[in-house]
Length: 364
Image (cartoon, rainbow, N blue to C red; front, side, top):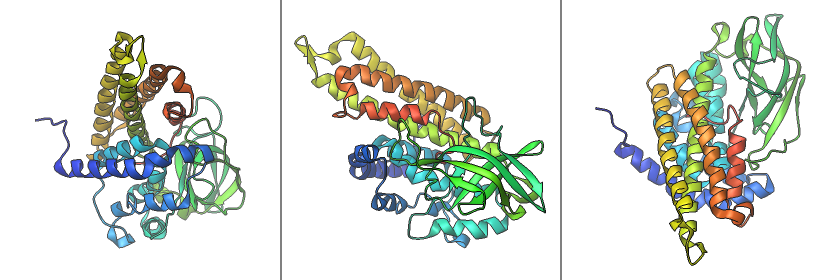
């Protein structure tokens, strides 16, 4: 029998994350957006949740808990309900760590995974987005050329989250007739890290661009070694995580608009009684439920080791479109108030637009 409900454990995790998001994340979301930064103490608070370290095996210093993609999607939804940028910040380290854990060689696991099991916040970033239109992570213009038993990498990357402080980058690059991922240290020769990019939304989440000019990389830092890695799975994982964040953001918009429409009086009655508003809110609710089913289905495929390429693309395409629709309609419900900073909906609209173009933001 198919069940669309949560297990008792998942409900407990959801409730804990919901409470944390309400107390620790939602009150600081606006401040992080206005200052274009996340305070170090807040990053440490997010790190203390153990979202990355608990799912790393004990032999590398982690908690040894099994990774469950559906549960992680639930966690991301609840954190993003508080603030999407801070939800992504909490899971950025997991994207790099999970790639090493799932696809790295034994040597790579020994070298890199302990970094994510310490008491202080530590991050490394995926570098898979490239400047220019029609970008596709699995068809990069960045090139890796074999040289002296290793590689030299040349190309450009953009929207690299936490690139200003990441210790390493996982760079997707063409290697002859296929695509590989390479681990590049931030101090590598030929690597230039830009100043923080100026983005429309998710402003608290610092992103940078990378310029790689014949950056030398050892063969030991080719993800998975000579056999390479399943980069499709890494991208699928990232896309499911992104849709879970957009789902949480969409729920936040809906839950803000419903009480507002009941309290806002126009022509001697709450605007919630106007059919145009009531029908719009009902459709927003329907879309949130539909989005969750697509997210959970894709996450379930990942969790059970099945190819989630089609499911993650379904989820990403649908959720990107509907999250923007919900955010836009949230502004419409608030009318003129939707455009001012007194209300968070304009910020959530900017977050939704920015998230729809990000890749490699988080992991489930």
